[in-house]
Image 1 (cartoon, protein in one colour):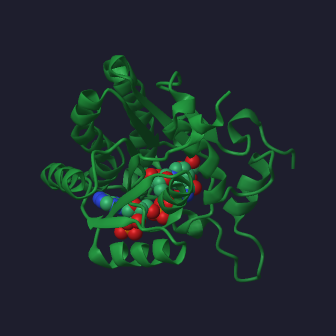
Image 2 (cartoon, rainbow, N blue to C red):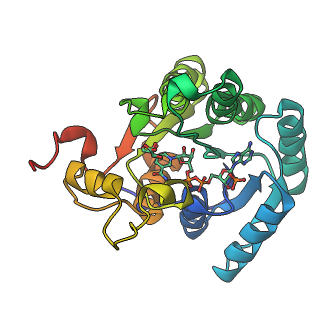
Length: 265
Ligand code: NAP
Ligand code: GCO
């Protein structure tokens, strides 16, 4: 086998919401694999924070302010990227939010906001890049799904609905555009230590671990939280030619959570 199949040399990768967290880690891996990195975030402060962080890693990333829920802004951004850097070979729909609110206490507006960022935006961004991928005869779209693409839990109704929908959007892009040599797959991270999950890991007043922290440790065969770096290899694989016959798949990177009933108390 030619191991260059895992190379991203000469490719342009756009990772949404990648100033930090999982998106940043994936972009870092793509840069190491040879890709040109483009990212966006919701405001200039975050973009500047990201640019500084990429520069500290020796990565010449290009950053743009763009709200991924704004279709006109996304269309404009894709045109700007194509002019300034090149056509997009790899899209990672990473930007996301969560609101942990019991469903009966959640407003319809709050529910819609989560759906807008976590499901509508991946549609908008994929729709913006697919026409050029068709013209080029290849493309990679990777949607960052979740355990909640398969499981529910209290207080995350909107997030689970969005991530479940994102799994099916992944499968539908595969179905509709696989004939154009476009592969659309998902990555389903387990519980990863990022700002988004920080509230679930906060030390208690007595110094003990957060109850949810202990719960996840018991539910994970690896008996640890994942790190953004745990996602780098799977993300490079799904962005590379090594996965050209993998399509419509959600690759769960969860330390085994989905396979495990959980450690007996
Ligand atoms: P994070 O730390 O909250 O980072 C998400 C990034 O997306 C932030 O920079 C955020 O900006 C940005 N963003 C939010 N709304 C946006 C919008 N409308 N337009 C552009 N950017 C926007 O999250 P993370 O933990 O790295 O997670 C990244 C992705 O992985 C998300 O889709 C998340 O659902 C998914 N995921 C996370 C875990 C986990 O355990 N951490 C597990 C499974 C899946 P702000 O800082 O302004 O919010
Ligand atoms: C939660 C967590 C999870 C993780 C992730 C798991 O509140 O349950 O935030 O949703 O973010 O999506 O895969």
